[in-house]
Image (cartoon, rainbow, N blue to C red):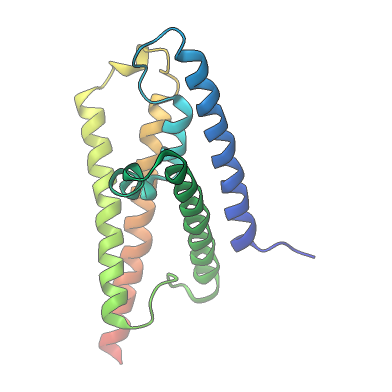
Length: 177
């Protein structure tokens, strides 16, 4: 029996999210003894960086919920997001198209919005590299900083290229019909 990608990918990412959240809790317990305001933990930064497209939702929605609901909704959103990623991979393999709406105006609007999110992350991370080129590389988390910037840039490139192709392909298909 072969496990399907659309089910295994969300389960693996949920496990990764739960492990990183546990690491975050343990980090806060140890750091809270010696530091007053330590900032975000490496685990939470890595979790947000792995799930970069959800970071905007986290900034605007999840942070306004009570602490426990904040974590629950973020973990559920990670599972739903990676299920959608798995469905997009399956749809790409079968139809060479994104797994989006079938109604063309809504599909094009979704494509443009997702391309905008990808472009946003590319610009923000490139601006971060430009503003702080070497400053954070010598900190205690210096090994993690390039990864934290590389993952959102890769997400941005994938979103812009994948959904840009889908947008152009949908427009061409619409014109030929």
